[in-house]
Image (tube, rainbow, N blue to C red):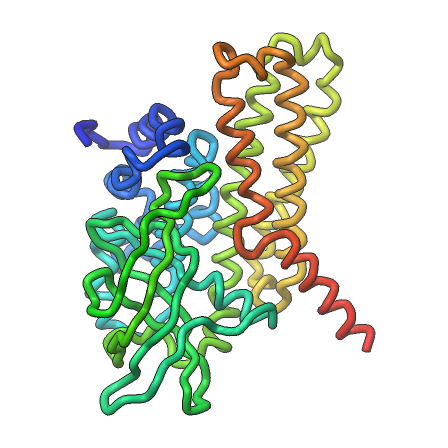
Length: 361
C-alpha cells in the first residue's frame, strides 16, 4: 500500500476508491485494517487511558456506518476488529490486553471475532464447536470455526468460546495465528465481500492457558458483549442504507418518478431506528433485554432492502447497464449479506418466537 493515510477522510477516500476491489477479490484485503488503523478508527469508543480517543459504543457503530457508506467489506472487517477490541476491554486479563491492544488499535494486528458460534450457542441454536480437554496447565483445544472474518495472513488473533470436557462452564479464549495447531484455510468463496479475509480455522491440539483466557464463564461474558456485537453490526446496515438513499436522491429521475415520498419515509424510518439503537446502548437496556436490539437489527435489514429497491427504481435501466451501473451492482451484492450475517434474520426471528413462547408459558 503506497497511499499515505493521515486522517479519517483519507481512509474513507481509500475505501471508496478500492470498494470494487475489496468486494470482488483479495488484492487489497490485507490493507483495509492498516488503513483504518492509521486513521484512528479503531480508537473510537475506547477509553483514553487505554490508548483510545474516548466515546461510546454508539460512536464506534457510527464510525462503522461511515465506512459502510463507501465499502461494506471495509466495514465488515472494521466490525470484526472492533468486536475483538471490545472483548479485551471487558476482560479481566490485563496481561492479554497489554499484549494485544496497542497493535489492534494501530491496525498492525488483525482481530477476529470467532464468537458467532457462541452467540448462537447462547440462544440455544447450536452447540459449541471447540472442545477443551483439561491438561496440567490449561486445556487442549480441538475443533473448527467454519466462518471467521479478518484473518489477515500477516497476523491475527481470534476470540472463541470453548466447551470443557469435564463439565466446567464454557469459556472464552484467544489464540494467535502462529499458535501451533492452528490452520487457516483458503479464503471462502463468497458471493461478495471477498476482500474480508474470511476463512475457516482448524484447531488441532492447541495448548491454551491462563494467558489466553478472555473470560472463564462464557454464559456470563457473552450477554455483556452481545449489545456491542450486534450494535456495531447494525452500523453496517446503517451505512449501506444511507449510501442507497443518497444515490436515489442524487438521481435526476427520483423526483420525476414520484419517489420523494418514499425517500422521506425511508429516511424517517432510518432515523427512528438509529435513535432506538442509541437509546438502548446509552441506557444499558440491551444488556437486560436483548429482544429490542434484535428487533432493531431486523428493522435495519428491512430498511436496507427497501433502500436498494429505491435506488433501483430511481436509477432505472441505467442500473442494469454495465457501462452506467456505477456502484449499484456492488451495493446490491453487499446488501445480500445483511440478512445472513450471524445472527441471521432467520435466527433472530426464531429467537424472538422462542422468547415469546417462554413468556406465554
